[in-house]
Length: 124
Image 1: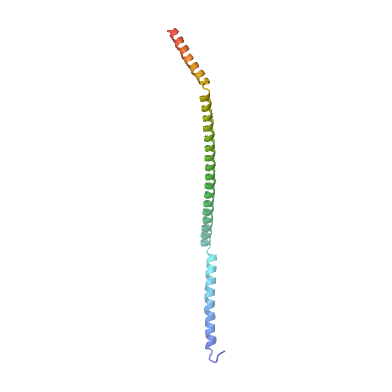
Image 2: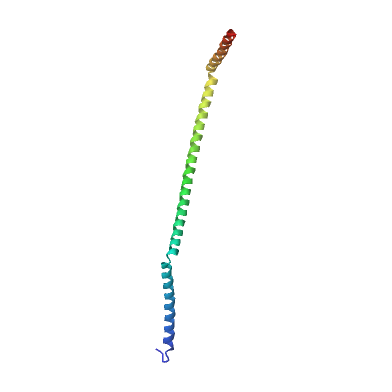
């Protein structure tokens, strides 16, 4: 303690100032808790943001799965196309090596046309 009391007065004033600041902060916190409407808006905003993030993640996941599925479908289509090309090539080679079946089919078609012409000619 000082003889004139100015040290105690200054310390007291500083403590009062700190107490007022703390009291102001406490009041703001209480007012924020008491403001239900603002708390609901904030909570709704947070929920909305979480939903947006989840939707974005879901969209990304679905797109990834679709891309993988598309890639698999393309690969399968390519494999099937290659198989069909190979089979067609093999059949073409078989027909080139053995033209008798085609000749028989052509002769049958010519005979059918001739028979149809004869039958039509007799009807007149």
